[in-house]
Image (cartoon, rainbow, N blue to C red; front, side, top):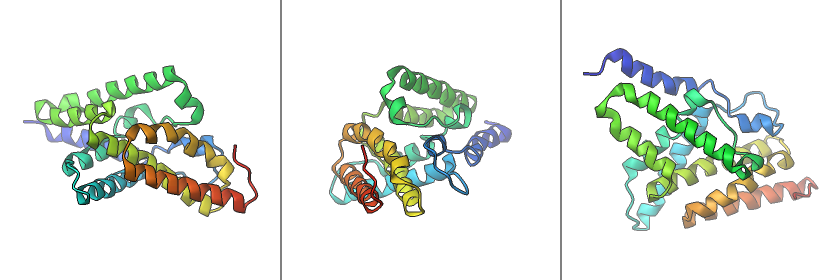
Length: 208
């Protein structure tokens, strides 16, 4: 039987995400009283994933909702070890950096779950499935991950942050949204991007 202390250590990886800031906002020059934590983003991703999956279910799409929720809850857990690495436009275009990040996260998630033994192997496999990004459930979570980020970007714009500072997040997300290839996710992205452009025009900002 797994020791209680081992279970507590696993849960503490989630606790540590509450104090790890999402680095992308600071790197983009966003000034705020408090930067969003990874744990806050994870919650937003879980909620977004549930809503997107539920919409697909209502359209009679065959999707495993429980797996979606588990993937969304686990997807950022490696960052309790690696920290948050922002998906800036420059980062996304650097394939070697992307590969290094993915490798580091694979090592991290393995080190988190291996002490839990065989009874937790299913969670490790669910994370691997998410990372591979091929199943419908994985694509929903990857889409939800981006959608939550852009929802937060729009909230920052509404609080007074310049759309120019946040434009890179919309641009760098486009290729991943395309690769997700889920109509409702694309529609949400397009709507948020349109709102972002409108905000910029209202402020007399020309986005490149």
